[in-house]
Image (tube, rainbow, N blue to C red; front, side):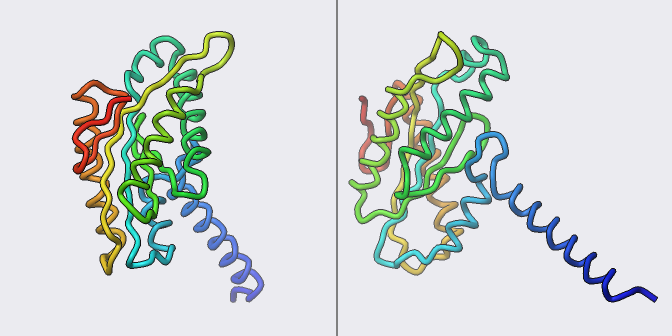
Amino acid sequence: LISPVIVASSVEAINTLVKQLALRADFDFQTRVYSRSGLSEALKRQALPADKLLTVMVLDIDGFKRVNDALGHEGGDCVLTQFAQQVRQLVDEQGMVARIGGEEFAVAAVVDSTQQGYLLAEKIRHGVESQPFGLGQNPIHLTISMGLETREVGHARITELFNQLLMAADEEMVKAKQTGRNRICMPALTESAP
Protein backbone atom coordinates (compact mmCIF):
# COMPACT_ATOMS: atom_id res chain seq x y z
CA LEU A 1 0.00 0.00 0.00
CA ILE A 2 1.26 3.46 -0.91
CA SER A 3 0.85 6.19 1.63
CA PRO A 4 -1.24 9.22 0.55
CA VAL A 5 1.61 11.45 1.76
CA ILE A 6 4.07 9.73 -0.61
CA VAL A 7 1.61 10.03 -3.51
CA ALA A 8 0.95 13.71 -2.77
CA SER A 9 4.65 14.57 -2.57
CA SER A 10 5.34 12.60 -5.78
CA VAL A 11 2.57 14.45 -7.62
CA GLU A 12 3.92 17.78 -6.35
CA ALA A 13 7.44 16.89 -7.54
CA ILE A 14 6.11 15.87 -10.97
CA ASN A 15 4.12 19.12 -11.28
CA THR A 16 7.24 21.13 -10.40
CA LEU A 17 9.24 19.31 -13.10
CA VAL A 18 6.50 19.89 -15.68
CA LYS A 19 6.52 23.63 -14.90
CA GLN A 20 10.32 23.74 -15.21
CA LEU A 21 10.20 21.93 -18.57
CA ALA A 22 7.51 24.30 -19.86
CA LEU A 23 9.63 27.27 -18.82
CA ARG A 24 12.66 25.84 -20.64
CA ALA A 25 10.58 25.29 -23.78
CA ASP A 26 9.18 28.84 -23.69
CA PHE A 27 12.51 30.65 -23.27
CA ASP A 28 15.85 30.59 -25.04
CA PHE A 29 18.28 29.72 -22.26
CA GLN A 30 21.24 31.57 -23.76
CA THR A 31 19.64 34.90 -24.62
CA ARG A 32 16.90 34.98 -21.95
CA VAL A 33 14.16 35.95 -24.40
CA TYR A 34 11.23 33.86 -25.60
CA SER A 35 11.72 30.92 -27.92
CA ARG A 36 9.56 30.86 -31.05
CA SER A 37 7.05 28.53 -29.41
CA GLY A 38 7.19 30.58 -26.21
CA LEU A 39 6.32 33.75 -28.11
CA SER A 40 3.41 32.00 -29.80
CA GLU A 41 2.13 30.76 -26.42
CA ALA A 42 2.54 34.23 -24.86
CA LEU A 43 0.48 35.75 -27.68
CA LYS A 44 -2.25 33.14 -27.13
CA ARG A 45 -2.43 34.10 -23.45
CA GLN A 46 -2.99 37.78 -24.26
CA ALA A 47 -6.42 39.11 -25.03
CA LEU A 48 -5.66 40.89 -28.29
CA PRO A 49 -8.34 43.43 -29.30
CA ALA A 50 -9.92 42.56 -32.67
CA ASP A 51 -9.58 46.17 -33.89
CA LYS A 52 -5.80 46.29 -33.30
CA LEU A 53 -3.02 45.24 -35.65
CA LEU A 54 -0.36 42.62 -34.98
CA THR A 55 3.08 43.44 -36.34
CA VAL A 56 5.66 40.68 -36.56
CA MET A 57 9.28 41.49 -37.35
CA VAL A 58 12.12 39.14 -38.23
CA LEU A 59 15.58 40.49 -37.40
CA ASP A 60 18.79 38.95 -38.69
CA ILE A 61 22.21 40.17 -37.58
CA ASP A 62 24.20 41.13 -40.67
CA GLY A 63 27.51 39.31 -41.13
CA PHE A 64 27.38 37.48 -37.81
CA LYS A 65 30.01 35.00 -39.01
CA ARG A 66 32.62 37.76 -38.72
CA VAL A 67 31.66 38.19 -35.04
CA ASN A 68 32.30 34.52 -34.37
CA ASP A 69 35.53 34.68 -36.40
CA ALA A 70 36.75 37.72 -34.44
CA LEU A 71 35.60 36.77 -30.95
CA GLY A 72 35.25 32.98 -31.09
CA HIS A 73 32.02 31.14 -30.43
CA GLU A 74 31.98 32.05 -26.74
CA GLY A 75 32.37 35.74 -27.60
CA GLY A 76 29.71 35.36 -30.30
CA ASP A 77 27.35 33.86 -27.73
CA CYS A 78 28.01 36.82 -25.44
CA VAL A 79 27.21 39.24 -28.27
CA LEU A 80 23.97 37.35 -29.03
CA THR A 81 22.93 37.68 -25.39
CA GLN A 82 23.77 41.40 -25.35
CA PHE A 83 21.93 41.87 -28.63
CA ALA A 84 18.80 40.10 -27.37
CA GLN A 85 18.75 42.19 -24.22
CA GLN A 86 19.27 45.40 -26.22
CA VAL A 87 16.34 44.55 -28.51
CA ARG A 88 14.19 43.63 -25.51
CA GLN A 89 15.04 46.98 -23.91
CA LEU A 90 14.23 48.88 -27.12
CA VAL A 91 10.92 47.05 -27.55
CA ASP A 92 10.11 47.51 -23.85
CA GLU A 93 6.37 47.20 -23.16
CA GLN A 94 5.45 47.65 -26.83
CA GLY A 95 5.96 43.99 -27.70
CA MET A 96 7.74 40.71 -27.09
CA VAL A 97 11.08 39.38 -28.35
CA ALA A 98 12.02 35.81 -29.28
CA ARG A 99 15.06 34.04 -30.65
CA ILE A 100 13.90 31.94 -33.56
CA GLY A 101 17.24 30.43 -34.54
CA GLY A 102 20.95 31.20 -34.80
CA GLU A 103 21.22 34.96 -35.11
CA GLU A 104 17.57 35.41 -36.06
CA PHE A 105 15.07 37.01 -33.72
CA ALA A 106 11.41 37.94 -33.91
CA VAL A 107 9.42 40.76 -32.37
CA ALA A 108 5.63 40.72 -32.04
CA ALA A 109 3.84 43.95 -31.18
CA VAL A 110 0.22 45.03 -31.03
CA VAL A 111 -0.05 48.39 -32.80
CA ASP A 112 -2.66 50.89 -33.94
CA SER A 113 -1.23 51.35 -37.45
CA THR A 114 1.27 49.93 -39.91
CA GLN A 115 3.26 53.15 -39.46
CA GLN A 116 3.50 52.54 -35.70
CA GLY A 117 4.91 49.06 -36.40
CA TYR A 118 7.43 50.52 -38.84
CA LEU A 119 8.51 53.20 -36.35
CA LEU A 120 9.17 50.52 -33.72
CA ALA A 121 11.20 48.55 -36.27
CA GLU A 122 13.24 51.65 -37.11
CA LYS A 123 13.79 52.33 -33.41
CA ILE A 124 15.21 48.81 -33.05
CA ARG A 125 17.36 49.06 -36.21
CA HIS A 126 18.82 52.40 -35.20
CA GLY A 127 19.27 51.38 -31.55
CA VAL A 128 21.23 48.27 -32.52
CA GLU A 129 23.35 50.16 -35.05
CA SER A 130 24.37 52.78 -32.48
CA GLN A 131 25.13 50.33 -29.63
CA PRO A 132 28.61 48.78 -29.22
CA PHE A 133 28.59 45.06 -28.39
CA GLY A 134 31.19 42.63 -27.10
CA LEU A 135 33.66 42.33 -24.29
CA GLY A 136 36.76 44.29 -23.48
CA GLN A 137 38.39 47.09 -25.37
CA ASN A 138 37.39 46.13 -28.90
CA PRO A 139 33.63 46.58 -29.11
CA ILE A 140 31.97 45.74 -32.37
CA HIS A 141 29.05 47.42 -34.07
CA LEU A 142 26.22 45.41 -35.54
CA THR A 143 23.62 46.11 -38.15
CA ILE A 144 20.45 44.16 -38.76
CA SER A 145 18.27 43.38 -41.72
CA MET A 146 14.59 43.35 -40.85
CA GLY A 147 11.39 42.26 -42.45
CA LEU A 148 7.99 43.04 -41.06
CA GLU A 149 4.37 42.32 -41.79
CA THR A 150 1.28 43.77 -40.15
CA ARG A 151 -2.32 42.60 -40.22
CA GLU A 152 -5.51 43.25 -38.29
CA VAL A 153 -6.06 40.82 -35.43
CA GLY A 154 -9.77 40.53 -36.21
CA HIS A 155 -11.18 37.17 -35.22
CA ALA A 156 -8.25 35.12 -36.51
CA ARG A 157 -6.74 32.34 -34.47
CA ILE A 158 -3.71 34.10 -33.03
CA THR A 159 -1.32 31.17 -33.58
CA GLU A 160 -2.23 30.96 -37.26
CA LEU A 161 -2.00 34.73 -37.67
CA PHE A 162 1.39 34.82 -35.93
CA ASN A 163 2.77 32.02 -38.13
CA GLN A 164 1.50 33.70 -41.32
CA LEU A 165 3.03 37.02 -40.30
CA LEU A 166 6.29 35.36 -39.29
CA MET A 167 6.64 33.67 -42.70
CA ALA A 168 5.82 36.90 -44.54
CA ALA A 169 8.23 38.92 -42.36
CA ASP A 170 10.96 36.35 -43.00
CA GLU A 171 10.50 36.79 -46.77
CA GLU A 172 10.77 40.56 -46.31
CA MET A 173 13.93 40.12 -44.22
CA VAL A 174 15.50 38.15 -47.09
CA LYS A 175 14.67 41.10 -49.39
CA ALA A 176 16.38 43.44 -46.90
CA LYS A 177 19.51 41.25 -47.06
CA GLN A 178 19.42 41.14 -50.86
CA THR A 179 18.99 44.90 -51.24
CA GLY A 180 21.95 45.96 -49.14
CA ARG A 181 21.47 44.97 -45.48
CA ASN A 182 20.98 47.33 -42.51
CA ARG A 183 17.46 48.10 -43.64
CA ILE A 184 13.80 47.29 -43.14
CA CYS A 185 11.57 45.78 -45.79
CA MET A 186 7.82 45.37 -45.64
CA PRO A 187 5.14 44.82 -48.29
CA ALA A 188 3.88 48.42 -48.37
CA LEU A 189 7.45 49.73 -48.34
CA THR A 190 9.78 47.98 -50.72
CA GLU A 191 12.93 49.29 -49.16
CA SER A 192 14.06 51.61 -46.42
CA ALA A 193 17.76 52.33 -46.23
CA PRO A 194 19.14 54.09 -43.16
